[in-house]
Length: 328
Image (cartoon, rainbow, N blue to C red; front, side, top):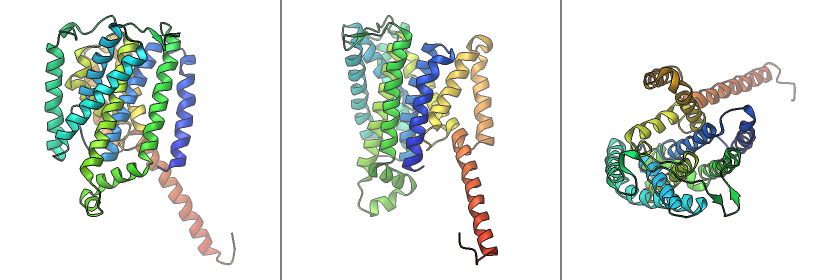
């Protein structure tokens, strides 16, 4: 995807996100979906563009939720709590990434999974997290001490702005020279090494950036819902973000957003009707999409339009060959 099409997607997404509250949908559900979408975009940056599969990304999402929630309950303003929670996730990403990128493939994934389970155990045993009960009663407070976030619509637009700025930042990273090097490492790491690039540093940078955005999503989620629980840091959440990314389309700009809205929307819509069968329904949906839409929802649409463009160009070339004397 080129830079111009990416800018169009950013503008279109901005319009959609800003108009969503007028559709009559529940603002808190919309804010939760935006947090999940940012989480999926962060994971897609690592998997789709750096080629690194992490099975433990929930450790950043959950840790930042607890840290931000605890700091806000301690008296900090929400923006400081979110920033510090995000910073802790970035630091954790640096530590975990420094250990994990020494291995490749399934070994990298297993290291992230093991470290994620260690973080989950620490959060479960720590006193400030509330254990099995979670961290409850996180106040929304006032943004910069001026804007009250008690109103759902006000908070929605704050979350929407953070999401849109983060989405555009990820787009810029992907289309920067750094992003192009990440793609070359994903496609052929030995060739990138032969060209003189220190691939470990580039992969570590991608891991830290991904952890930072995942932490930002977790911090915002704790402010939106007013609590942080062990669910945010458990293996199930790591699996869900993989599902969102694959369903929407790995390596596409908009795919993780679509996947997060589909999965999150189904979970919210079917929770009361299907109960525990929601997991089964999501599993069947995932299997169907893998079989019918191997590139994901957005990836298949992109391929469809590319095929149409190729057919149109082939038709123009064929017509030109039939009438070589005609100068277009």
